[in-house]
Length: 305
Image 1 (cartoon, rainbow, N blue to C red):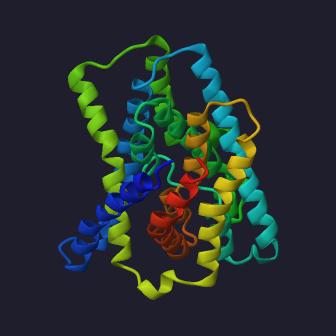
Image 2: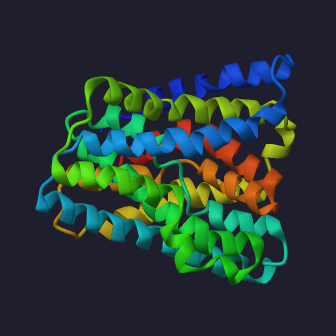
Image 3: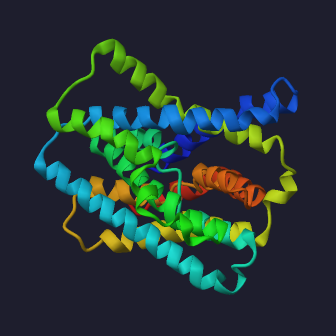
């Protein structure tokens, strides 16, 4: 794999953060606006991205089976990382920094950064974009349940209701019937869905820039945060590669899985921290540092592919 593709792709994405940074630094926009933009991203753009992804793929039982395999592998990779993080930090669970760090070890920006990255790296493989949303479903399911319980320290979040009723699964209730029936949205509606879906990456990075403007740069660089970034963005894709190496899967499938596991710390880690009211500052720093570090880690991981 040509490492220049992920390098320049991530570099361009990082440039999207500049307007957000400047708007907050110059006080043209108040930092309090971040939460409103984040809600637009999670509740409007993300569902449209899911529909957009499934509209690009054609239904077949074989394809559906591969989605099922991908979903199981995504659960396995994230479960392994959450387990490893728990073992590493089990004696420090009373400190919210370590609880947030445990979740950050497993969750990556598999759609906001994963989709444009995969479209650039595998332009002839539209299934990759679908798989990124399948990965997001697994992450969202774990996020609203196990990860919420870890961050808050309260097991009440592990429930069937949280598994079924979350933005990712609700978006699938719209996308999957269209996919199964081969229904193509009318051109104008399709254009609108595509536009909103592709807004996810710029909006995500604008939010990153806005958050960066509110923190002291020095606070991003701590030994714990560097350790978490190394675990999430270097160790996790290596674990993912080991999971699929001996399986009879096509090269593009393996590449997609490894790249998605190597995506930087997910912005949803911060979203969950804000919703739960715990560890927001630590989550923000991990997301920011992970996103900046991905310009080096993602090209390195692409060498596996």
